[in-house]
View 1 (tube, helix red, strand yellow):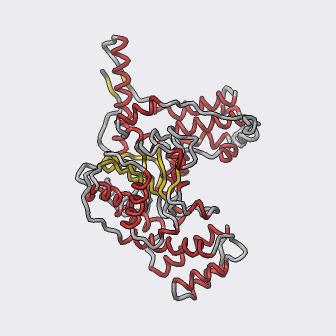
View 2 (cartoon, rainbow, N blue to C red):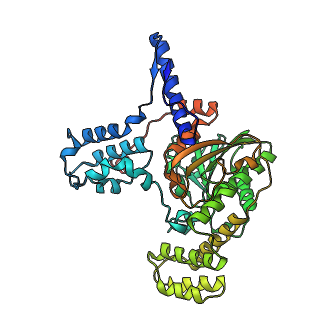
View 3 (cartoon, rainbow, N blue to C red):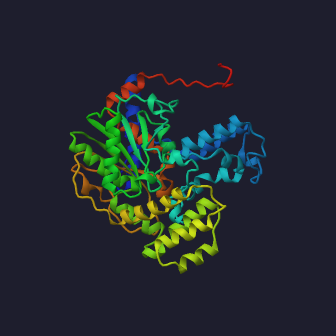
Length: 443
């Protein structure tokens, strides 16, 4: 049997090796069924660019994409919505990135042809500053303060209320980053084969330490769920620190499980902060936080606010200056705005100082993104081996820290590590989805 692209010289080559093993096993199974003695297994991913273009040509109904002017957009071609969704699906399968429908409609023929070369650039936001950690503010203050939000998965895509969950079944606990909001995990959750819920880090937790947040989550879980022997936790960014603490608490209760660390660790988060935001003094960090949240709330920057911040001496003065400038521009309550400012500053400071002191029995899985060009060198496992007695498993994705939750491969990684009983249970469930052409016709 001949094998291709098998190498362990680097992390990237190691990823190709894992893909090849999958192809090899499929080839072995096929050869046994066909009783063939000689088999050649090779990786078809080399032809991804040509395959994508060919599929797009079929969807567009053209023989050669080069016959269409480069500056023509998909909107100009007058495609039906179903064709746009087909192209969206092709790009998702090929590049593992979910492009918004609006962006796809605006794509030109030239951008489609160059997508493979551009995808690495599009998968990074190296210059986003604090925007790498705080992307938006929820207009619904009540929703933002809910301790737990049920997430749509393959098992429960139609469940919207907590009462509809199976409290006796296992689940994936998802802990978001600094902003603490459930929406960051929507892309990941939709393809999971296990029920999942996000434990939000709302304004009501702004005064809590990292261990206290973990304890708060565990108390909430114990009141509602029957904890299984094996637990599953996914943490992202700042949420990884809480996930590790939560795992330590669960182990004290006799449980053991898997903690998925999405492009972060206590040490790596400090590296990310310095790379994206810079190693700022306390005063400059305060100003950066205030200005960033003003932009998120008001939708614009303010030179006047910047001058006020330079003249302010204390954090309360800076918060007050911002809230005064936001009058008439943002409809959030004063308490909500102040809590957002305070929790952001407090959590960034905690992340810079957090040093856990425990060794877990549980498996740690690092899902590692593309490093920022300014990032300091750090061990391949982000030093997670300091916190577990087991070897750290590492998977690479092709997005940077700020865009990591949008990578579709993450749900596949999680699904592949679920207990076999959960996998078998998933296979028994109905995968049919109900859609109503007219939502009121059923009445």
